[in-house]
Image (cartoon, rainbow, N blue to C red; front, side, top):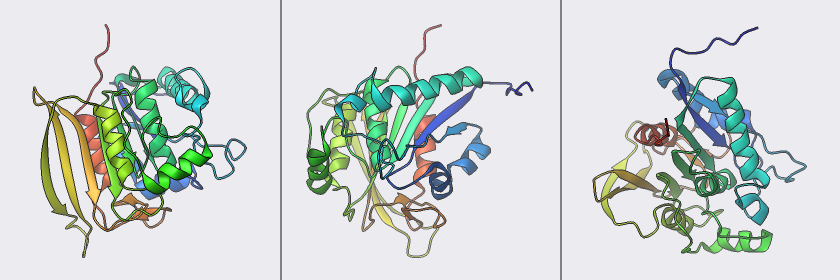
Length: 263
């Protein structure tokens, strides 16, 4: 049967689950499907195979998986290309977001495929290139570290709980640094609380704009939050219903960024 195509090409969000999670669990926990129905975009949830990683983590710490033409980064980009071929997808509005190991892989994709992804969302994740094996991965997860690698210059939104005992909060700073590098930015800090929930999570949101006023990055520091998707549903694993709605804020950030495409 022919697939009915929408009148206009739709944006696409690639959602990368964390360790021990699967696509169904991640979809329920993040609530991204409801946003897709409301706003009109496609969500793709790839699944990591237990044979590739026993805990179903994306192998963000393996050098072969941090490169454009090999491993999981190449496979995930190829998946996006295949979906784009099968559906009416706007190539200028393709985005990637992930939690934990999925967030680390999202950071990698921003570096390896800036010609595919217009913006990146990293929740409780790690920066591209901070580890090269399991030992360095465990170290950076525990201690965090700043890195001074080449910047991706792909707009990036970061969420991280400052009480995260699984991935050290310092990793959020590293993600931002590898996203925007030494670019001249103006930072605006706002404090807030998720007032939609009784005793909701408080947070500090820092927005970064370039000299011409364009948004380039956001950092949401979630006060007292652990290793969990902010504002997520308790029906999914690794969620914190008390926090601001990370899924809605990521989508809002994504809508502000479209990739320039050649005609």
